[in-house]
Length: 288
Image (cartoon, rainbow, N blue to C red; front, top):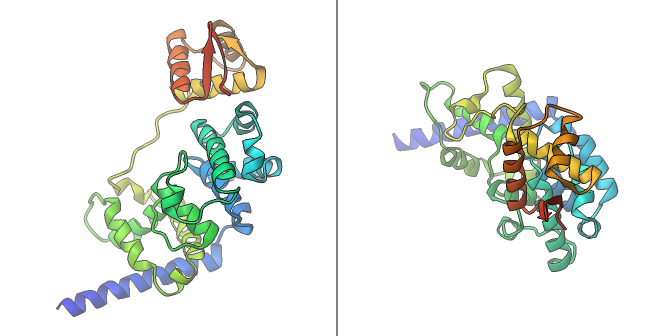
């Protein structure tokens, strides 16, 4: 009975991999960071892709790499310059962390992006997923990592026939570990590209499988949110320079509804905690 069960699992896994690879051969996507998976470009793309649609990232990535093609180049830029180029991507802490990463890589690693997830995880703003993804896509390292499209692929294929249940990432990680054998271990970069593209296609054709994940959260409305106000503050300070809170309110009101003063203060407080904005005698500016 145990042998049959193990055989069934192996067959299911083989079927999963065959379907993923087949979809990739027919519908695989092309992106600049795939066409040239150089380590620095891969690292930049992974920061930009966090919680942002791929199509939106492409023009930002191409402009960024043209302007700062190496960690040393970004290290020598000001945070204000970096944030000006980042405006529109949102979640500006990612830009701050990317700039900090460039400094560490340039100064401590001779400008070379580290190769293993353990070392990558020690860099600013890099967690379990990002470290695994950078190691895999930049160096073809056989790491195990999970993001939204990978999660969707696993849930759809291995749990669709079951009654509605909540699936934890530890279960998906177990599947991914088992899948890293043979062809996928020899070329994990290609395997994960295929897996991500398969998961992305599922979400366009059916109800998002990730709704059954224990880690699923629906993104809150952007319009009128604190995220929108934070983005407006960073955009205004990066492009127009230092400002008092009154000037900021007027400038922001020129392009959208003026935020309430208490919300603007909350946004500024948060940006100061994130080391993006600093204040001196009531005047706010991009830090550093």
